[in-house]
Amino acid sequence: MSRAADRACEWVYRGVWGALARRFRVPDEPPTLPARPGEAIRSTRPAPGFLRYVKFKFWIVLLLIDGALTALWIGLLVADLTIGLVMLPVYLAVAIVPDVVAYVAIHLRYDTTWYVFTGRSLRIRRGIWTIRESTITFENVQNVAVRQGPLQRHFGIADLHVQTAGGGGGAGPHGAQAGAASHHGLIEGVADAPALRDAIMRHVTASRSAGLGDERDGAPAASLGAPALTPEHRAVLREIREAARALRAAGA
Image 1: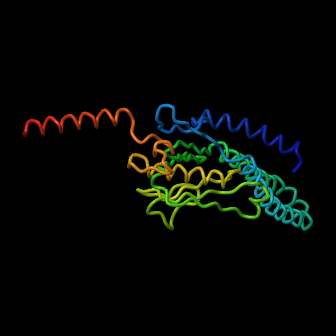
Image 2 (image 1 turned 45 degrees about the horizontal axis):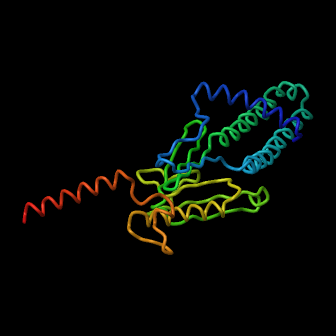
């Protein structure tokens, strides 16, 4: 497809997207995620290569389907000119309308997908008609795997599969598993998948050691990620300690 046609589709999409966003109150900002004061929050979408990757597959499927429809209509036109002309509007509607809808859906999928990270958790938002959000706490993460097919490699992207405790088969392909517990998260179409995997695993290590008195390489656990105890936690512990001392003094 030419760049001019692609820009025209983009222009049409922006108009449709604006109308849909206003009508259905689609959020155009990343989701929020609780964080301690001063804790960094990172929000990102899939890489631009992911949009090109999905659109490339879209154009391949479009050419195959529309090619078959065109061949069918030409055959009908050759067999009976009158019937072929009568069926022309039907052919155009069947060939064009689904393509426009699919193109808009691709951009909607990209624009509504967000990944938000803090030092303790990850939140994934995606969806077109229904916006879905799932949150994964790093202390429950068991494994983070990078998966990349040949076509993804060409576009410079990969997927991250985040497996949490109790996870296994049955997870949905586009996010957390349905049901009471979420055991799987999909971060798709990122350009720096290995680096992101390593960063998540560092947060996993920090989350598991924080607050347990563990130290690594002589450094406090709090320095690996989130602080071990907040000032509020320390205040409550001091109150408990003073109450215990008062009880012991009363018993003596």
